[in-house]
Image (cartoon, rainbow, N blue to C red; front, side):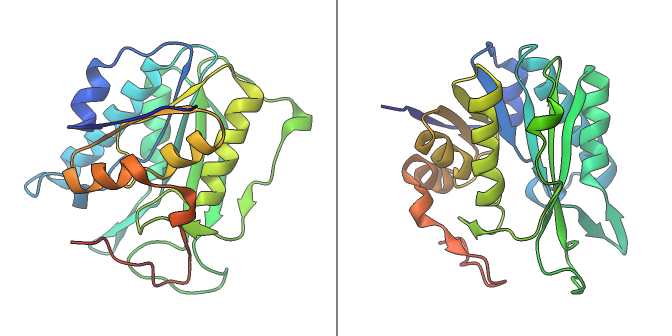
Length: 227
């Protein structure tokens, strides 16, 4: 029987003090500036995003990994490349990139406005390496299903858990910014325990009971977060 623990609290503060062992792998998304304190400047958020990634990378064991799913944002006509910020943090912590894949959020050729039409799916590790025969596709053509608008796409979450089971000794997935708990649900369904941290009490309640059956097909009209 797999276990799931959802902690209501500040994910940044939790991550800074967390003591993780070789059984833990971190799978998360660094929050956007829109999800932070309303008075936080863009420059301060950029620095924090790098710090969060670097902190996560310093927490994992040598044979473990940090997996991030990030969608770039557009602010005042400028694109903020969140994969660049993630790689800055990983580099500061001395981790190497295992993979950097692209997940299409809409069909190629379509124009998007608020966010680019793709997401970044990245993995970093202190020592883990991938044999050439274990390579997988670098571009995923569709999000598949989503549990909510800011979720990690189910296709990436499932592939992440399968990779962790196949290539590591990790048995616990940790998400310091778990939202509705997509990766927690997918981890449990793949025989992995899960720990999530979420500031919102409402989202914590959702994350405690979410299953992959709660996902909906991505059609550009993902159901809104309930009030």
